[in-house]
Length: 118
Image (cartoon, rainbow, N blue to C red; front, side, top):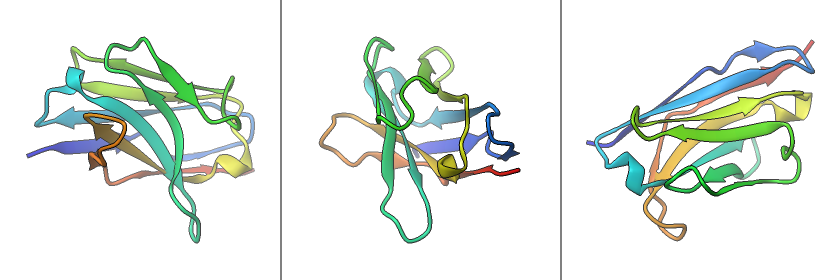
């Protein structure tokens, strides 16, 4: 059974930093593309960052490029989202996603809440 478990979300002040972690089990982790999405109430889930199978290809949406860094550790079956310079508009539930190809829906975690507020 595939499981993705996110952790690390919490309340943080504007300008602060946070690292989210996603622990994967039940799948050959190094064969999966990994992504972070986020969602706020009333809006569609938004792709934030993605990383290739070998940690050699990363992509970000414009609003987080230069502030967020996605990474993965294939030996530990984990991937991460380091977030710096956090803004109130980064407030959302962040979800981990694992997929074999860019066109398959893949698997989702349960989400972790990030709140940026003073």
